[in-house]
Image 1 (cartoon, helix red, strand yellow):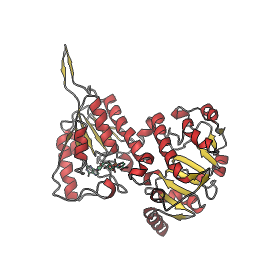
Image 2 (cartoon, protein in one colour):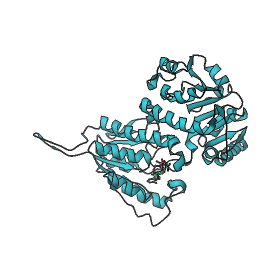
Image 3 (tube, helix red, strand yellow):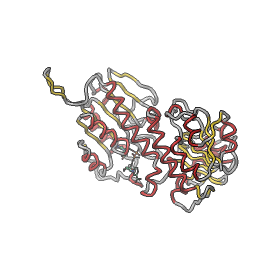
Image 4 (cartoon, helix red, strand yellow):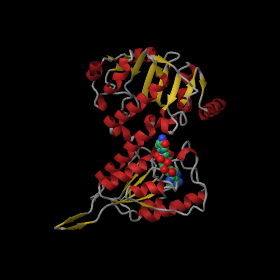
Length: 382
Ligand code: NAD
């Protein structure tokens, strides 16, 4: 059995799906590994390091695509790459099956089995495969570090002979995985932190990190959807959150916003008035940019200065920390592979709820019902 590791081609992508140290267990099972030359360089893994553990390195990308039985990737291969895959191969990665299902059509038609790391069920047994959480942790950390880097103020309170400097005030919107890491990082740097989330359950976690949880009376509506995620709110409930955000923005030096509702565009929570209320020099990092952004002024991927306030909308912060992002991702991938590689053979058991949940397509047909519906409507349209 051959496992292929490609050099990622998406603009700005620096991560690699598996690092040399992640290969040892696979090689020990007798699995052959072919790595595209340069695949790990941005993540600190040179070709020689892959060769040292026993992998082959080749510049022939097409041959890896054509021969690999298993292809762990960070991002979905392009249609041209998919066209080279062999029937029955298994591709695993951030395949964006809910945002861009049609982009997977070539592989599905070729009877390639596709597993999406975004769809791994968030149940206890699959925690070690939860790549969304791994990447959100990195994004939350990096958002605070980036904001601290450009804020014209210090984060910690300092008492010096030249006077006392007050601590920075940080406001985190959405206290999920990324938000909690942003809170923890800002607290470690000495900031005073406030946070807001629609899920009441987030309050306890926010307080346990030493931050203040801002409550909004949403009139008793259900704010939790399934699986611990937020539900999509009514305009009226959203407006109550927007008012709180505008009020809190006026005394915040940094806002990190992470609010998302799975499968929906990010809720627009931050009005222009909130940006206008912030002091010049303040920073807002919109981590929801890939889903459209939480701020009505956000332009995904673009950093803007608006009345002296910096509004950042990064699309791929984990790629700015490629070593550790790849390390965590590789671990998630390895744990996932353990479910489908048995005694150096691929065995896809869709009776396993983790595999069934994460499976986009198998033997030419969509498996995940949401993806199936999206593909059907794309076909009907096109
Ligand atoms: P997410 O990225 O979907 O959203 C980020 C946060 O935004 C969430 O906390 C959400 O409640 C919040 N949000 C959504 N709409 C909002 C609004 N209008 N106003 C304010 N906040 C809003 O969430 P996530 O980081 O993926 O985590 C979601 C939940 O899943 C959390 O409860 C987390 O603890 C849980 N989780 C469980 C597991 C597991 O059990 N394996 C793994 C990861 C996360």
